[in-house]
Image (cartoon, rainbow, N blue to C red; front, side, top):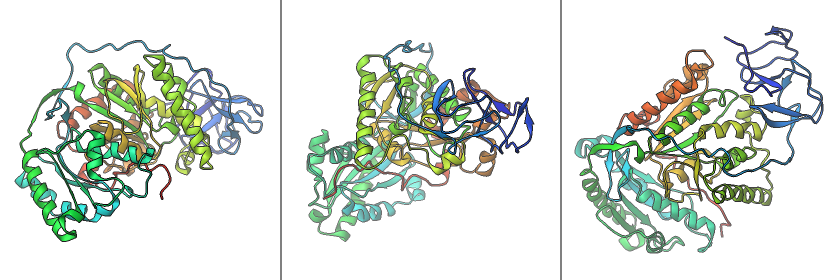
Length: 502
């Protein structure tokens, strides 16, 4: 097995597939500095201010001369603004749909969408009703629900920290309402209770009207002030949830085509192996899902910064590509307004894993999106309106991003990680993909699939893409993920908070 990996013939760096001590000689290259596993080593002279190239793309500029065999990382690589060409549609080649789409066993809803899980959700209009919502949910243990309502996966309280002190016409309240509405009518939610305090900015009746929701056997509402206080609201809420459980339990799993699957594409705790193993493998699985008629949604706008040209070239129409660029410009202004900068994104964990700049991180992150045409760009938590590969605007913070994707309609999550994220989600099950074998072996109870087999020479991107796709069909049909078995998902609901709190 090779010890160094060059991803593109144009690259002037290679990736170390194992730790390399200073003074050693590897594949004809004299190693001058210690190179941690997953990090970059120069394979030719790179002069000061010259481009550092990986994946055949610019990932930064040398801040000092870098000789062959030297470690290439934060200490000698910088980033600054440079021009990139954004063409629209040059790589949009259409979709080669399969003749016989795959199927799964899911919950068919009245709006023709299909769920992969069947939860009853308690949603809060404001933080002031969070404790009461949790108390209502606590009355329904998973064991009790499974025994009395075998078709229901559980009762979950989706609480948050906002809903008041907001501009009633502001972007923050609009986002929150889209999230609450998206969860209330989500295909993985068999019944929902929206609970408010009563005097908040995010009034429950206004929320329903704004989002086009109406009361039904599967959607109930209430407020603490209207019900007469905490104890009475808990009692009333328990009664309403029992009714919702009875409604949700009437749904049984039935065969559905894979076109009803919408996959959230996520990464967290990325490392130098992400672009070699898990991310392109997930991209291959996403392409397969699209070929079977389904959808895959990439997000985390700050983490595609610098690689957006790879997405705009896949846009099916110029206005789709332009909408992504508009979101990029918005983020540049937004981060500057708050004293940040888009080119300073990699986390300490990313850097420890070998990622140096946002350009490098973004080029790897985009690999999760495969190669399919980009059919749409959505606002945060905006409901999906077309099938295929799409982009949804969101922060790079994983739980905030996934919350928006689920609200938009994603009923599955696939999450790649190199450092070892333990993220889990309700109501959409989350499948976690390890980028490297050592981490997979350390955290096997949390990881679902080991994509490090690619580096180990035991598998390929295409083979793992097929494995991920087939595992997604099993998960969609009810097979639990590792995070579900560990009980994750009750605390990961995190709507994007934006705008002044007054």
